[in-house]
Structures are given as structure tokens and as C-alpha cells.
Length: 192
Image (cartoon, rainbow, N blue to C red; front, side, top):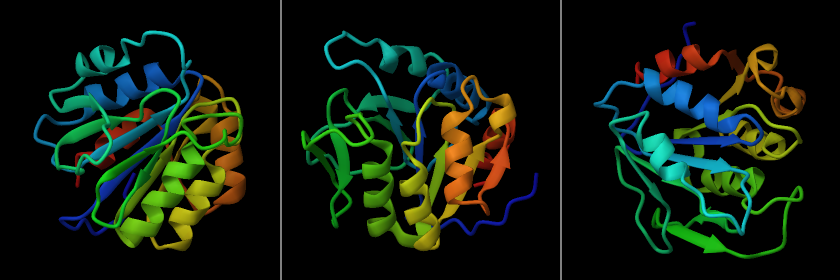
């Protein structure tokens, strides 16, 4: 699938997912070339009081550095940042990370919408927002914000998602979003 997007040195990729997301992320990362240089932020719904091995699981699927995002950390190329459980991730104007324990949004913390809106406000047209499998509408308002600020919007084909609700809701909010399979997403990222 041909998608036009002009990458800049400031481009950010941000991915939101929920139910079925670990498998989807592993599939994408298996297909991304080792030399991929853009920063990636992953917002995935997960339990707040359970020890997670997500960092290690995803690290086994990629040569990119996968790490949990830390307060005041600057976003760097070639890094994959996982939003910690029970925190919202916001991006400051200096492109550093801010973690918040504000109220749940869409019954979630982290909220995909919160992070997507923040990314769209800071990165404008230099953000690529991707919504993957999930069981609620989180991410649809954030993806709409990315589109309104000139960023590129991608949604996993709901027919290929483990749970199609989140991609379907995202497409209702942003009908012009590019619809892709997980393999298509990897292939597209490799063109950047």
C-alpha cells in the first residue's frame, strides 16, 4: 500500500492498542528493519497492580531499544517508549515526557486519547498516529486530533484485528485514515 508522508527529523510514531495488542505489536516489530530511527511511543492498556514483562516481550521482537518511559526523559530517535501502567503520558513543548496520574479517561490510565492529543499538539504534522486492536473507543478522539493537526492517521484493518471495536471507532472518527494490516504497517514504517 502506497502512503504519502514526508518524514522530517522531528517525526514521532505513536501507537495505541488494548485487547490483542501484544500480539499486534510483536507482529509489527518483527517486520521493522533494525535501523529504524524514528521514536515510537506505545500506549497499551494494562493492569496497574500486576508486574509486567511487556518490555522484555517486545524487546525480543525488535533490535530497537524498548524501555518504559520516564518522567522528564527526552524523546530520542530509535527508541520505543512504553507508557507505564497507571500513568497518562503527555509530551512537553521541549519534547520531554511528562507522566500524570490524572483521572481515568475512557476507563483507562494510560489513555490513548490523552497521549495522542498531546502528541498532536506538540508535533503537529510530524506525528504518525496508529490505532490497533482493542475493545473500546479509546484512541478515536486522539486520532481525530492528529488528523486535525495535519498528522498521518493509520488504523489496523478491523477485519484483521483480534478485537475490532477500537479500529472501528477510530475509523468512525477519522474515516480518511489509512486502513492497513499489521504487515502493511511494518512495510510502511520501513519506508520512513
